[in-house]
Image 1 (cartoon, rainbow, N blue to C red):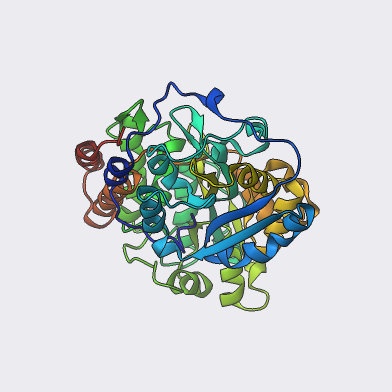
Image 2: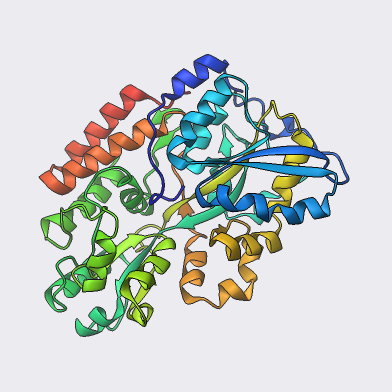
Length: 423
């Protein structure tokens, strides 16, 4: 899900699993996925979709119904802030739709309930999707959905301030990124050379790319592995931006605050997703898009960013399972993905879609497309929302209180370990 429109909902995964019963174990395997019949879709296909997608999908599906005249797609729009609870309640009450959007970080939780239908291998080729996106659907070795749209994170920066600071080469490593932020602050006069989120909900999305790029893994099987040298080193690097006052400890997450700070030149760079291109163009006014650019995440052992977005899942209790998967398959066609991007600006999860001139010809979009080749999501676990809250809290201690990174990482492990992975 996009963090700017995603609201964390505190529903314990264990409660959902207990109400529904045990999920499939890892021995089921993808070979257990049932095939889908040949021919056109028929019957009513009920779909839940959130946010803008929920508002636009009903009209968009008319093309599918034209192609499949005996099928009817009925879309229910669900607000993001109610979505998690609505899906959890529907699972518990066995009142699910045929298809639902599911945020990528929710897949592990809902797949563990045993109510998601394994992805039919006869309809979908995992190689067609960005690897990081497909991985969001895989739980215990089995895929339980299909990536619909994706997003990742890049570094937005003020090109004019970089020029003022005398920067001639853009950063590609951790060391170069620090030097870049230092020059933007000391030579270009920015208050924050690189704004990093100083804790609070969702700060893990800014922090974890540094950990992943340093070779950190969050789990080993069912065991959380947060207290590692790789993650500690990433926390120390993240902390250095606050110790050296290259990033403010003021949370600029309030609507419009970060954008205005960037437009005013107080913030010279920050990490965010593709939606910020439009937000900055709107807030900065005519010509402002010429003043900023985007950079890939800096390299350590890799240059890995976060991948988010949303998946589409079909429920095991679907009244029209066959039609549901055919609708999902239609939405996964490269040309349909491009048309969907043109409708709501959701970036395609299918790699072939990125060959469209509308995407390749846009320097911002092509940069995001390139970063999507090296992007990861959190491991699919039933308790990710609780684990994420633990990471957020410790990131805040590191950034705002100067907590020793090793102590913060140890606390992450202890607190997250008491929650467990829900397996």
